[in-house]
Image 1 (cartoon, rainbow, N blue to C red):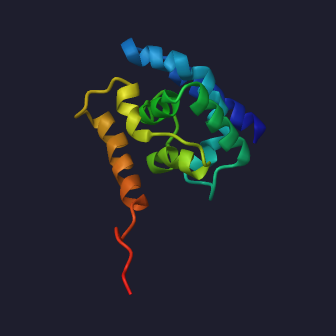
Image 2: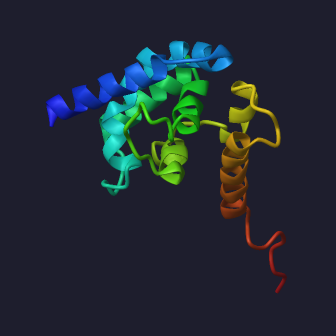
Length: 144
């Protein structure tokens, strides 16, 4: 298990370290930070019921040092260099599952994504779903 986590962390670091413009700068900024999320892979790949304490600790560190790094991981989820399949809902739900404050709706701005792009839509749809789930079903208290 330990060698698999190391291997996956190395793959994450290499994938995040690759290619173009703002994307390259974001990947460079996040490559070492995303290694802290290697223990989250079981959860975000749909194989675990809940994130581990180590995962949540790593996530909190990442969110405190560079909030955009979770956004980078989700945005780059289909990068063939990652060789990983991430469940986007679980990855974006990590902050809530770990009680770690994060505003997913900030991801398009943090990553300088065009507002109507496919990448921005992923974050916006998740934020809308979260808002709908957390809004009260009744706005007023019933009167007796």
